[in-house]
Length: 430
Image (cartoon, rainbow, N blue to C red; front, side):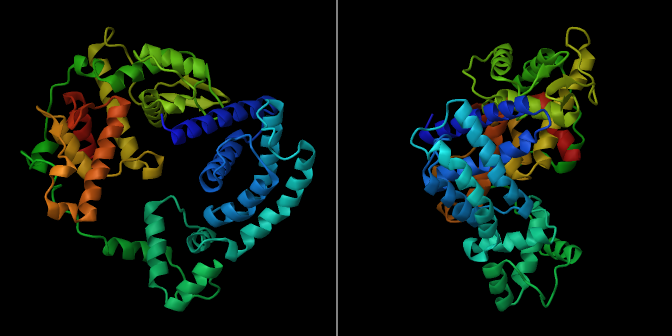
């Protein structure tokens, strides 16, 4: 594990423990929102200020973080800015009570006055366009118009409108974060329509995949035999079954909505994996099934506990009902692919669609898919950044499915099963 990964895991551990500490102190505390705020602050503190220790807070460091780094890099509404200092105050209390407060930090006696001083200073800095970067000014204005910055289509439409502005209006918006009377006010529907009309013609067949042996129509009409053994030997389905059986009548979850360390380790053992566990979120082998089962309605998390639900297709063991197990296995594999297709890239969604779908169709047939090594690619291809990016996006998606246990990998060879192929065809039809 490299130093950056170790630092990230330390942050995750501290945040998980803080969430538990916060809920223990106050059942009604907005622990999830506070953890998200602190995750941002600790990450920026490490990345921008070279201060990775969650317990190290000098006066200069906290001032620079809240009045310079955050305004320059974070786009957030004013009410979230107002919550930062109170959240940090509670976090400092947690650090002191748990012995994590670094002795080289500011004096404990100085903390209340410094944070009280920063409540106004942080707001003032957030309101000052000169403290923000041009991108945070532009995107901050979009947020004030109601743009969902995490929606790719909404963001593309907004940026299309911004790029259509006159030069002086673009400059004014990027420098001030305001545009009081634009010559052409933002029209969401018109901007979305313009983006769709200007969308590029889809690229041809991926250069790094063998030519398809069947037409789209032939693939759509595939009728494959479904064998319970195909699902029982799929690592993803196997861990999904282990998770449902492990949850049983219910288990406690942490403030981040995960199983605790002891439960996560026990679940990994049931999946045949021996791991040291600091956070469930470090282990894609169980995170993948966990997210899919929640997406599909087989698991529900509420009031600090996770419990089983019936789901769209109820779970039955293969030994009890072979046909029912096949239906369940198909449902969870399809939910996995649909969930990753629907998610944004930042949330773990596929990056390379529709190329990834084509790659999966080949990987699940006899012989699997051997991804071409970039070093052996045509020099003309390597000069095209977009074509190289296509390869990288698909490789990332395939390796993500390997990490979850849905695909298998041997160096450049990716292989899937007929069980996964049936789910891929279902996604294609959808």
